[in-house]
Length: 185
Image 1 (cartoon, rainbow, N blue to C red):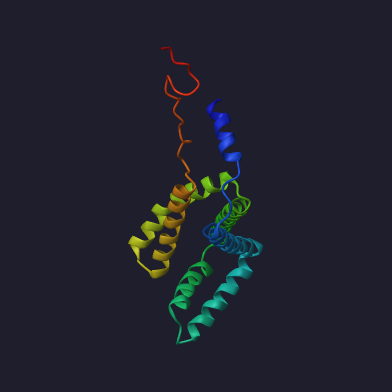
Image 2: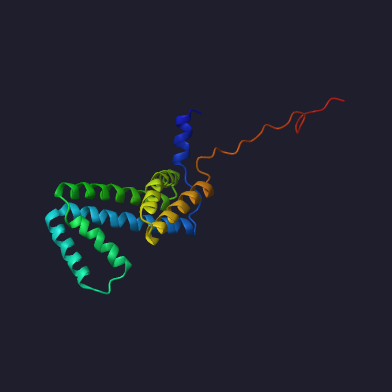
């Protein structure tokens, strides 16, 4: 069998039954993908309207003196987004759409027990870890550390538990003189 046929066979087969951890990964990917998709669509529907909405949210959040950590984080993100040039907003929207589609593809594939989805999650998650690590090193926050830890755990769990990137166990040929051979005496 050629390497291409082996690859098609490996990616096309179903994986093990879905357990609780896989369900949690599907839920996490679905939420992230859905939010990214909604954000991308909202940004593409009208940059000017979105900018006004963002400015209104920033003003509302700044008026409340008892804001907490998440409100400060949201305010900082929205302030930057509300004052970006329209072309940059469109590029961010396209990136959010692409990320949302990727995350939803991972979730659907994993929920349907597709082997290719496990590989996709491990590869995409593994590629994102250096960027997340850089973000944590640049400015450490509990949210960033939590996201990094979750992604590292997901990548390790899938790679080890599902035996990704590991060849099939090799079966050794039966020893000579074993069962089925007549011995001459």
